Image (cartoon, rainbow, N blue to C red; front, side, top):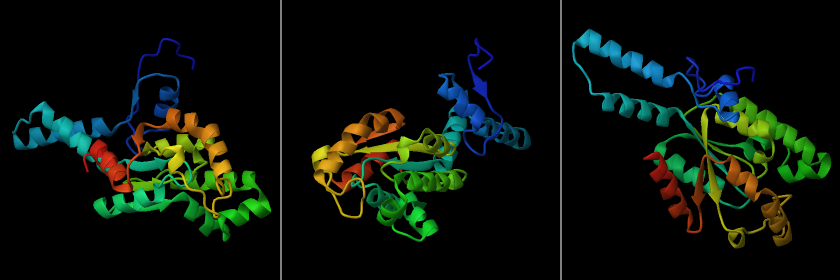
Length: 230
């Protein structure tokens, strides 16, 4: 904040992919990158020195992108009933990545179903639990993270998810969202409409990639796979 003419930030650290320094710079609109590219470039040049073989610059970028793609978490956000968990399961089968469902983790840690937490302890208590869970998993990599519908409501969650993740919004149309009794804030059509109107702009503005999910689940997965070259 003290450097009002700052035009860029580079951090030598590559784990996590985006340190607090990098994320803070990006939040201020300053171009910023972590140290993974530098790490790859050092190895690239060292290989040339040791082997006497010169590699084309294009190969450096190709290797970097492959390593980044293998390390970066696929973070799924979206409305309740948008299909995040199902999409995550299919991507898991295609990639053999670990799948983390933050709602399930919350239930495992608390020992109660989410509906029970809401009923007996209130929404604020659940959001605190959800934020703790997301912070705990923010240092993992090479995984799929399916978030709860309200995870985007707290900036700290998005901040933590971005350390190692790329955020994909599953943007399913409102008329395709089906209420279910196990979702405390989306257990009726009226409730879903309220949540949608309250959150849709937050979902879209916080996403790195918006996936149009008008089609079936397979089409949605194919679109994400296309972005990631899976």
